[in-house]
Structure formats: C-alpha cells, structure tokens
Image 1 (tube, chains in turn red, purple):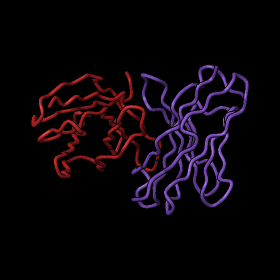
Image 2 (tube, rainbow over the protein chains, first blue to last red):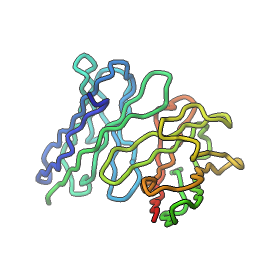
Image 3 (cartoon, helix red, strand yellow):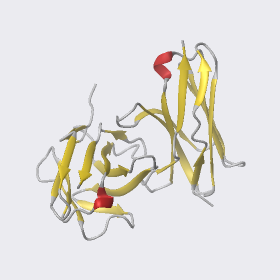
Image 4 (cartoon, helix red, strand yellow):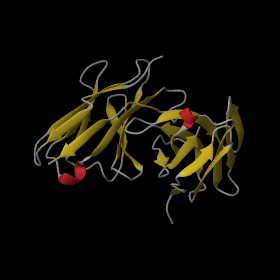
Length: 111
Length: 114
C-alpha cells in the first residue's frame, strides 16, 4: 500500500465552482498535514498547514483532516482561473521533518 | 516576503560529472532540506540538515550525494558522479525551529544529465 495516495486528475471546473481535493494515507502516525500548490515548472508553495484532526480555514481555502479515516481534504471556494495548478498533499510524523507527498492533483479552472 | 532562492535554474551536465546545486534559505530558518521530483512523479525527500549536520536522509541519498552549509547563507547539494537517473527537479526548502514541518520551497533547479 502506498504511503500517500492522491488521484492525479486532471480536474476541470468552471470559474466560481467549489474545488474538492483529497488524499488518503496508510500511516496512522502522521500528525502534520499540508497542502501545497505547484504551478508548472515551479516550486511547491505552502497553502495550508494543519496539526492532527479538524478543520482550518484561510480565505477561500479550507483544509480538513479526518485521522480516523486517514483522509484529508482541501476545498477551494469561488475558484478562479489563477487557481489552475497542481495541488500536492504532504504529511509528516511527530518529531520528524521528512515530508511524504502525494502525486499531486491537477486542477483547471475554466473562465 | 522572504523566500528561498536557488541557482542555477537549469543545469545540464554529462554523465559522470560532478554538480553543485545552490540554495539560499530564508534567513531566520534553521532547518534545511533537499527534495527532488522526477518528471511525472512525486516529490521525494532526500535529506534534512540542522545545526551543521544531517538530521535525516532517505535511501536515495547515497554516497554520491553530500550537503554543506559553506557559510551563513548558502546551502548546497553536491552530486559527485551524476547518472542519467539523477535528471530531475531539485528543490531546496527551509523551515523555522518552532514549526519545522512548515517547509517553504524554492523554485527548483532542473538538472539534466546527458
């Protein structure tokens, strides 16, 4: 079983729609969960950072962590063409700074 | 806003040659990392560095790789004898002491080994 699984997409949505992305993971010891945005041929840009379970909101972005199901989600409200990118989930263990990444999910927001 | 910078943006080298990839982490960060991303694949952890020594390394980071902080601002990754399969994007990242999992990435160096 792969450590972090993420459906690569691509996911196409009309402008203004809600984008819903998710990752599953196998290691129940993961404690820190991140979402990164990566534009083509650029470095990953940290979007959201959460510890343990629960929700976190930042502007149009909401991150959810469900540790009992080993499942994390990212929601983008009122999506814009500038949100078109690849979204990577990443996670790490407590006391360990090695990030384990998903493969990334390509999102296209159509004007 | 402070950011991680990397040079060069693209490096082309012949198989067997040594390459050095350079990074300037965010100035008040104390944890430094190298990751790589082979085209179409996941971002993979290579090594983390703290207090002038390697704190963790992956199975990818073998004897061909080394890291160094030669001065107070630069952080380098050296590949001693490059192989074709070393062709990838190499990302440097850094994080602060209080939230070391909150890692900020540079724009990457694309390494092409011919």
